[in-house]
Length: 341
Image (tube, rainbow, N blue to C red; front, side):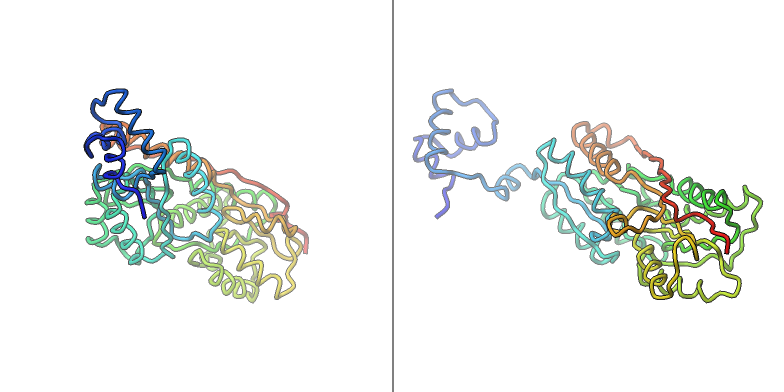
């Protein structure tokens, strides 16, 4: 049978209110009385209920984190960064995976509000068109700080931390051009998302700056999933005027490309050069040295958590919009090279 505050009060010979003052460290309690209560707590092996405490204080020591793909290493590292800072401040995390599903995201937001969490860190799921009023009103009415991680909600001003996707795509495309490529295919992410739009801009900008015409036949529209990249890569390999390189705009789509390469006996970079956006450690482990654009994912998580803590500790900062953009890094491993064919 669990020990209650009433049990502590009886053992210490004090009122329930006095025990609550000691547990919550609020209000004056004589030192002798405090020691008696603490002794009773130890002897009865009392553990405060987090749920009961949240009901009395109207908040918990918990932060909500919502991501669209928990199996994606990109988000895994972001969560790692969030967790590092949360540990420093003795905060707990509740994690929700939405599978890029808007209904699941709305459900997660409503559940988090019911749990009296202190704040939310979220990478929004992008809708097919615009953010609907139900979603936006849910975010607005949370009544707690909301921090974005690499996801823009254009209709509302939220603080957040982002990657310069235009620069990342520009640098990747430019690296292929410097290696001698002129026919560079692009596999985009979901074009209703800001990162995908920015990456397409960066790709086109690099071509134009190097006096290479933008050929729409080399632009293929994916969805960040490896299945779509697999099918698209098959199409690319069947083209009469095939590109000599493919720039793939997500780490998960790289897996789809590599699967298609394997089935068609395509060697990298001898038969086709390739660069990806965001790393996949598993490829390095099996000896596939794929060049990639590396976003500072762990640092993004750490900064996002610090922005949230700043909001919690300084209510005035809630009124200040803070958007931090981090620069990605080009990591070349040889898969970008042009081999004379």
